[in-house]
View 1 (cartoon, helix red, strand yellow):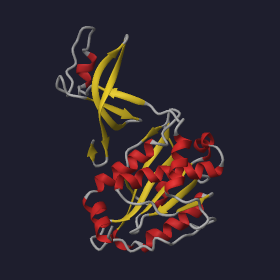
View 2 (cartoon, one colour; view 1 turned 30 degrees about the vertical axis):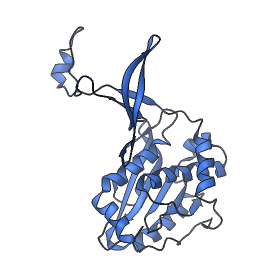
View 3 (cartoon, one colour; view 1 turned 30 degrees about the horizontal axis):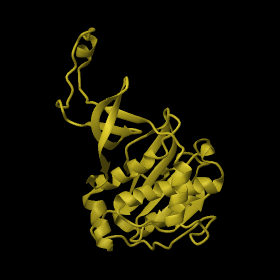
View 4 (cartoon, helix red, strand yellow; view 1 turned 90 degrees about the vertical axis):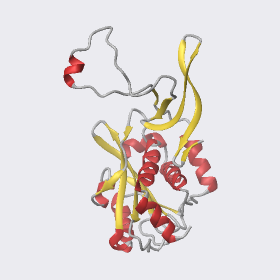
Length: 264
């Protein structure tokens, strides 16, 4: 894909980038944690959940850089440092796939300071049109992990050298980010449980209306009868379907999977 095409993707369709980061962040929202929506950040430091966080970065072929950082407490359930690298690399793979771009070589960093040095070089090389986007993973009010991107939103396109690296591990010595690594990452994440919610509909009510509610009251939702319900994974729309009854329990028959490009 050409530089201008990627620049148009980010500049004219930043919602797609935010959606890609939000979906990737949902993969780290486990054990009761919640993924926040992706949004523009004021600076690179906003991507660092804690000084002792580790992380990975990958330059897309035309210059944008994806990054994932995780604090030590949230990384414990992922296992060894290599397992953490594989898991975070797979998370970036999700974001890259949503954007329809191949993921570049993965660069792993054991210290957040080293990763910030690398990202600062990338940030400076992108020039005046650079922007930072990120989504946080929360445990209560604390941010324990982040997934982000550094992009050039200027019409002139991206100018960063995708081979630029810094820090304790070079791109050539990091595990490969494609094919086999992505599959290993998916296997590592396969047993992690996510929260799945079936949403029938929503309503907005004034505080006074809520206080007046009594048993037997009817709350009108924003969804017409017969319309499919939403299936959310960690708060992110994943599928749509219809309500069915299995034995004595309600269930959802999935009719479509929602992707970054639409639905299938």
